[in-house]
Length: 127
Image (tube, rainbow, N blue to C red; front, side, top):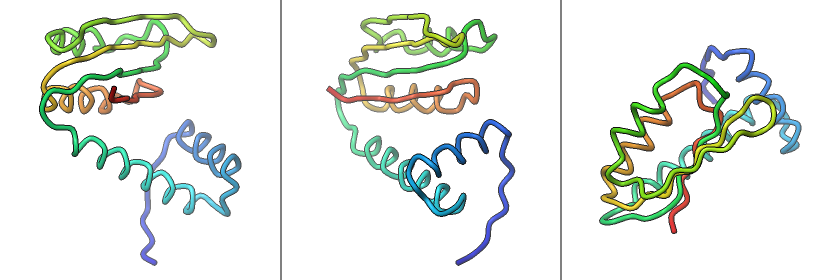
């Protein structure tokens, strides 16, 4: 099996180690492979989105972070029918977007949010 060198933040390593323990994996390499399989599943799910799509996009992020959530949200207000913002424990916030619109637009919205390291969690659930 080829060996690949990867740079990770301390937070990434903590998550990887927690995941390894929680899933009973034998090492970090196995945990990385599990992450890749999960990402591959998500990409496959996104690829099959066509036509008009309706669903819920959930995002968790640190409270009071200076980043461009609002810029992204405003860019896609045409497909957002409802937005809910809630304060969670540990200085976190939950954003819930109910969306309805063209699949290409939704894919771009998810792509833009996924590209932000400041986000702890991004998940789309199709209705």
